[in-house]
Image 1 (cartoon, rainbow, N blue to C red):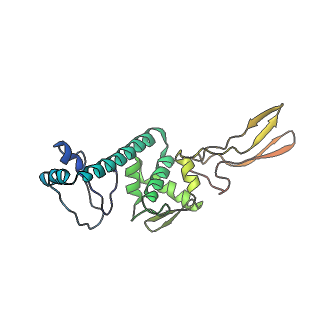
Image 2: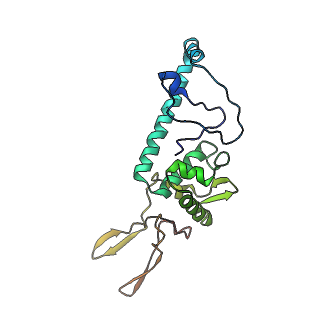
Image 3: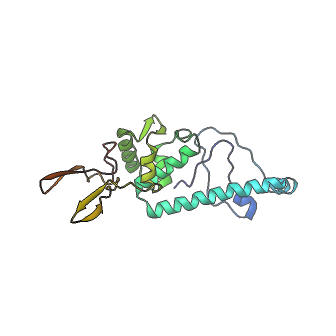
Length: 209
């Protein structure tokens, strides 16, 4: 499983420098890279001579800890589409909010969300068909951020309206957007046609399990 990805200017291996223990994970370069190696004695000397460096390191580690908490919560609580949506949103926010940085494969996404490549490919293909994302080669851009936020559990789905029957106001909630077999249709009661739409009716979308 891929724990995270790093880009230009990022660092890794800091735990081994701070705790004098072995590394908890290994790193694989996804493309040709140039790395700067900082040994433990040089690192400690930098901390002593530049105290502000320690503050910056603590900030970066807090950000990574928060990311780890979010990822653990997503793996426990969210289905695969929700985990993929949360990953795409986070990676886009690391760039310009729309485009995912670099080239990312379906296999990489699957390993980051704890799923299979086939399932991730099916999810992304469905979203691309319905205009939620745009896929060009290995580059992905977000087209409908609100739908992804709803899938990721970051946005509460709106209520579709109020159905008045027997003197009671009954709110008709939108259907979950990760069930493809819930199709929109016509429900007939008392000779009146009432159209039930799912959460993605504005896009005419059906989403995979």
